[in-house]
Image (cartoon, rainbow, N blue to C red; front, side, top):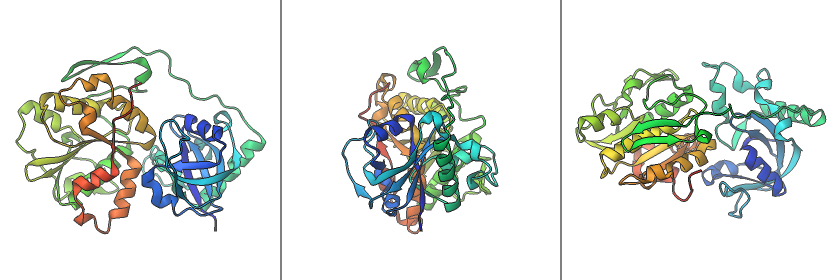
Length: 370
């Protein structure tokens, strides 16, 4: 029986795939377990992420999974691969908007929040229900037979540079890098549900590994899927007293901390919205105030924002710190976190936090700022 798998692209990586002959689809090395489960004859459902949010093709798997480092995409290697042949392919302009299929796809049903549907499109490969896969295949095939051209979303006009104050002084973000909504350097305000989900997963994972945990002080009242943050058995009510009051005020707003005895063993900032700057600024403020801090820092964000996150961490602004941010901050994608938690659930209590985090995160060096 054929299986259907979600296959995520950006406009750029879709074009690079086509330019390379449309013969190989690739995924991150941490997706190898899923890739190895694909079988000849399975279908990959090709989806453009971000503000595009359109189906642009269906690919048939023609080989077992394999590892290959040969360059296809400029942004990343994607070495976990399968050979494919296009069943149908569209341009981004003639792609099928996912929101046009709200009545046909199960991912839009029984949502606690009408905006949570996007959580189903944050990592690939991901096996889809056969009925959903068949619906996408039918929609893309119909769009190929009778294409409707829809212009891609444009930038929202000219925007002035944004100035933010941080422990290293005033930071300017160019117009091209500004988010689509307001930036806040605080952890407060309304966050998308996926932020709360990832926050809960990190808190629960930290507890399962034997750590005490801390959640940002203005997030303690949150719940996820019926689970209250405040009910976690090892949720700290106070921070370790190793910093001065100013530093503690910054640390108290970090999304999630793992604590062992009186030492912070990991700090996580979750960036699920258009702006990644609030988390970066908290981290840089911490490093500016405590240049000898030895806390491992992790920026956790959607898979499709990896390049943007790494580009920002490598900005010269953040390299001015006594300890450059890129030297101590690593990236974890939402889906890598979800997969790792699922894969280790049976033996999570025996895992060592530092080794686990090293395995699922990646170094942010080696890429220049935009």
